[in-house]
Image (cartoon, rainbow, N blue to C red; front, side, top):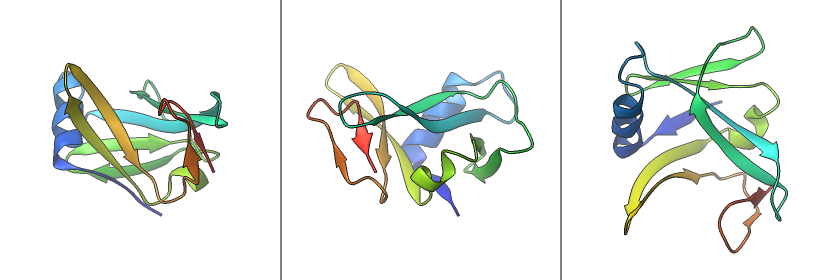
Length: 106
């Protein structure tokens, strides 16, 4: 099982979480949106025994056990699109996403 970061995503996480050593980001999915699930990207406040922890490019990634089957093999990217900045999930498990790009189905 693995989750990877692009160089751009790792650099952005390090910048956002500059005070945290190592920078620790929680990734997950939750039921939401018109396609069924939405992605969760937030600073990891704590790590529990059931969490899976990955390290890539100096960033610690925390994923809850119930989200891991949905995220296994995912690459997290960071892009600037016009005036917007966004994390993008390149997820081989995703079957479809809604037109607005805010939710995904598995």
